[in-house]
Length: 428
Image (cartoon, rainbow, N blue to C red; front, side, top):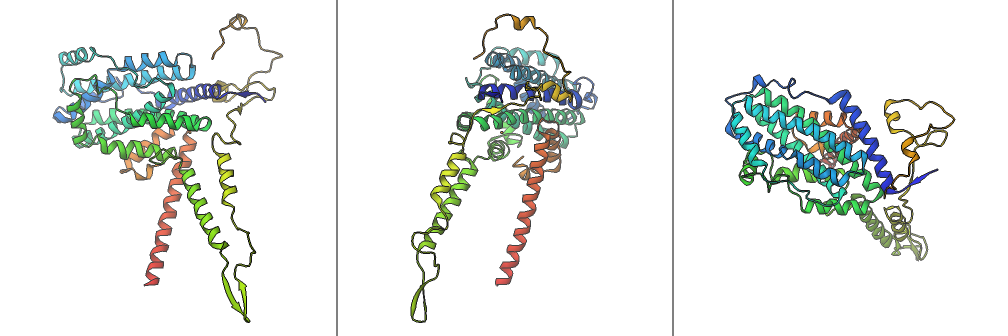
């Protein structure tokens, strides 16, 4: 069976995820910013604060040329990532057009004001906050989840002000953002399978230095950020509650970026070692005038070898002696690598004696060098939109299982709480 390196494995993953993403987008998620939003229902009596919040997000989207072009220089050789990034830019452009359209339709901004804002935003460029591709994946994952909640919370404000046009646009946009988040989330999880230590280190670095795009480019950003925080749309509290904590929980990391399984295993080993030490102390009872050992196991016999268990657990961790960073790749019966495109379409390739000649390949070519937290979400509509975004993502089946698991855990917690309450009452 053919083996591939971690980098090649990730490139294959990127390409397959790209095809699945585009398939789902074309089948179920494409929308028209010109015809699908009822701009004629924009509320001219909506508040200035609402318009300011919309303008802030619209201003961030105005740096889309920088978001796309500067990242493409970094990921140019990765077809999966670069093509996804171009499609991501297309989808983000529709978000910008929708927000801008509402500002004009509602009468909050004139065309002259729109042009003036555009001119003021064009003087500075956005630069990549990190110089490593994997760090940029971590950054975009965080930013996309934050943006999802920005738009969801803004939609709640628009609903209170009875603006059907803005509510419709923000609801569609928020589903896009959720799907974007899931794409990058899946990528981070996949990287953790093959380089857990390096990926977690990058994630911690990004979280330690994270800030939303536009902070140093948008004029008056601090005032705009204060408005967002005051209205409860997005601020430090929302960042911790809705973004950082759910991401760490989903990746099974604690607040110190340590694997929860490792901590649980360590605590279990410590409990087992303590139990072993307690059971090794000979307990004496008197029977017929003779001293008899109650545990009766003999000297030096421990029921739990914590040292051996720790070694086994260590070997099972990434980097341990049992961990292999090279994995089998899927093939057809003839041994040839499976086509990601045909897998998405659902067909097998036609049988030939050999592939036909490729002119390009005949020339010498240059050689090339992973919701939990959803049970904490408030509001049925929030949950519904997250579910919609999850269902339209590449990992819909996984997300369904996670939601089911969360429900099972919640049910078990309720059952245990009832039992504990009954035991407490019985003991009184």
